[in-house]
Length: 273
Image (cartoon, rainbow, N blue to C red; front, side):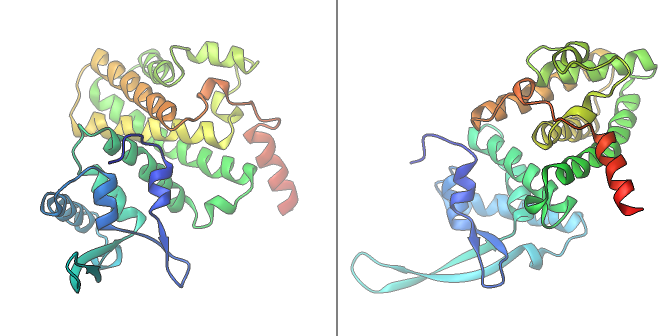
C-alpha cells in the first residue's frame, strides 16, 4: 500500500517503447491511484475515453488495449487485459477520478502541467531556461485573456475589480503576499510586470493557477465579484499546497532571473536579424 505520495510515483511507473514514446499501464496506474478493484477503475477509464472523444481526439491513439500474462499461485498462467495510456490519457483519467483521494489531486497537477508542457513544444524538457520562460510566458499571455473573459462573465467588470481579482490569485499562490509585495521582494519598479521576472518554474505555477481558475469559473458558473475573488484565491492556494506536497520550492522563494522576458525577446530578435 502506498502511504506517501509525490510526483515521482507517476514517473516511476512510466514506460518508454522502442520508438522512444512514453506510456503508462492502466493496471499499474490503478494501484497508484488507490483503486482496489479493476471494475471500479474501468468506469473511470470509460469516462476518460468519453472526454477524449468529446475533445476531438482519437481514443485509439491514447488508449491502446494490450494483453499480458500473469503467473498463477498453483502454476500456469492467465491472460490479463491491460491498456497502454498516453500522458494525455492519464490526465483525463485523473480528471475523472475520485476528488476525495489525495493522490488524485496530486495526479491532476502532475499530468496537467506535464501535458501542457508537451503541448507547448514536444521537446520542452530539452529547452534552455530562457526558451522555457518564453514558451510559458507566451502561454500565460493567451490564457490571461481567457481568464479575464471568464472573470468578466462572473461579474468582474471594471479595471479596479479585475486588479483586485488578480491580486487574490497571487495571494493564494504566494502565501498571502499581494502583487505589490511580490514586486517589492523582486525589487521591481511599479511599471514592471511581475511575470516578466519569473523563472520557468514560477511561471508554470502561475500558468496552472490561471488555467484552473478560468476552468472553475466557467464549469461552476460562478457569479458575483466576491465569489470570483474567493475562487481565484482558493485555486492559487490549492496550487501552493500541491507544490508543498511535491516537496517543491514556494514561488516567493524562487530566485529572480538575471534577465527579464523583454531582454530575452530583444536578444532573440537581434540574433534573428
